[in-house]
Amino acid sequence: MIIDLPDTTASQVSKTLVRIRDEAGAVALGRVLTLIIASQLGEEEEVIAAANEASREHPMRIIVVSTDAEAATARLDAEIRVGGDAGASEVIVLRAHGGTALDLRGLVTGLLLPDAPVVSWWPGECPSAVRDTPLGRLAQRRITDSGNSTDPLAALRRIAEGYRPGDTDFAWTRLTLWRAQLAAALDQPPYGPVTSVEVSGAADSPSTALLAAWLGLRLQAPVDVDVADGNPSAGIHRVVLHRDSGDIVLERTAPGVATLSQPGQPTHELSLARRGLRECLAEELRRLDPDDEFGAVLADGLDAALLAR
Image (tube, rainbow, N blue to C red; front, top):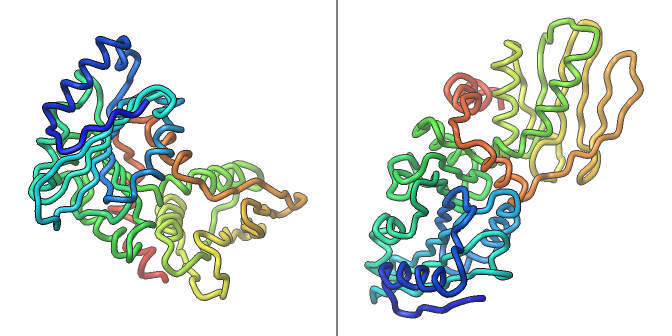
């Protein structure tokens, strides 16, 4: 069910939610958090679909704030989606025009679930110092996606400069499977130290930079980042861990497929698909405490990884 509220106010949206609850039952029952999505007009549906899918694992209230601050007339149009149109969540879409878009905190504060954590997500261009933005100050966790910025590596640098505990980025979340495979390979004999590391990836891939930073920080080994191998595919292409006993090589050979080779063992073919919005969002919503590993990589490893390019 979709309820349209054209030319409305945040107060009227809140009253309509109360009316829906009274008529149809406690729609907020079982919701574990509020997810605020900062979007642009016309770009809401993809992120709403991803959030609806993630809500099947994390029932929540989704508030989408879609703005056009350049509009000449101040106006708020809203939608409330419940039932089959909202997955296991309830979705409130706020389309703010003109001066109405200048008070984002005021728009959403009265719509937050009481006594529930708040997560804010910027699926598009990354703002600087997200903790200090109006929606960032409301949230325990703040999610960006530097890979969707016009200049992904510049966005990653901004994230590092403005980092506060509770911040994370989908470029880091997309590394989970790579990190798990590499850690598992190092847990097998022989257990010699890694003497150097090579990471190959697309020139504009923030995930490549973060993986290089993580490996250099945790293995305390020099890292070379190759972004000139002619491979046009996005993201990470290959990682080589050099050891005296032989190299460990994890390489994506086709979309969704990688091979792992290491001394004394047959080459293994692995599933290593690029993770979509739904998978990344669901993973980040599983933890509401700060990601200390991400913070350490930004603070102590990223500069060296970027210089290694």
